[in-house]
Length: 412
Image (cartoon, rainbow, N blue to C red; front, side, top):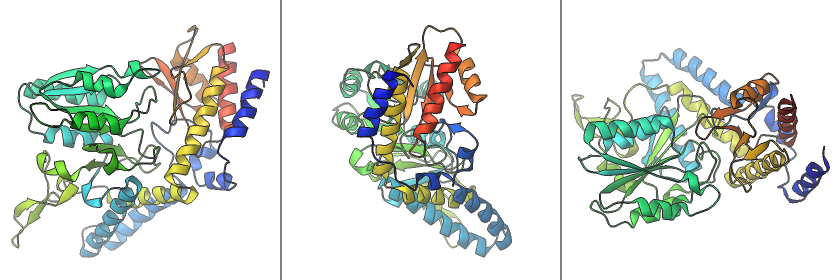
């Protein structure tokens, strides 16, 4: 260890949140963490053993009950209520404001296609959104004649006021802002509450501007009070930072805007029925956007994954440790002459993005070299960088291993 790294390591030990003694035991619940050094929580989190067992057991139970039976339907209702309540508790929302989905993507599609767009309406989107979200907005533009513009939030990573940037790009005909809470490429945490306040206070042709939030990188990281934040739509997945099974997520839709969104895809779960089984209206709350048969056997997996995290510590405690660890990684990267972190100050969440300069080898080759040593990170294309994600279950030793391996790769 160099003298410089020694000094910041000592400083880190003096200021970091103390790690509970049961972290090592807690990590044993995550099989993937025993196989390598995992820094891809922003892509997909490793499931704890209790969640794996819950999914396996659910499949067996479902088949034993007879998958199309009254007993199975009762079991489905129980699991649906349990996972809806578990998510609602984590986000501090009413269960009725939650729609169970299969992904972040499905959530933003429900909101975007459910609004009654008119030609000439304006949609504002940040320049740091996921390509899938951008493609959806482009199709709205093509199909309905919606005017779309981007606001340059990437420029505010190390200075500037994101709220003022958003405010300055609102137009009289703006109906919706599309933005992430934590930017997936740079790791910036946006001041969502003030951005929402600016949009809701905008006096345009349509009244308050609605806000749709991509929460792929914030649910499971930030302690959340969604009703206090004020966002109209908040779409997330359970398979990233919550470490649940892939194929299960959710959409929070504020109660005040639910009647302004029409279901685009409709099925038997969406509607109420009369005594003859004919549709009579929509299910109350977020359930009106749930369509038909779903992967119900995943529900206990996410319920158990959320419980597993809460057994270690509260959302606030987990977030503090995430910030401590990301700062530890950031400081180590700062000590490497060939590495430049995108963020010039300590990160406020678990995403740490950096570039190698001068570029002697492509970032993709560095990532491949690291994976050969069972160190999992990823590349980002815009901006061209490497992204490492730390969770509360990451250890300082793993970060040291990453820093050492990266230094060795750059010295070749």
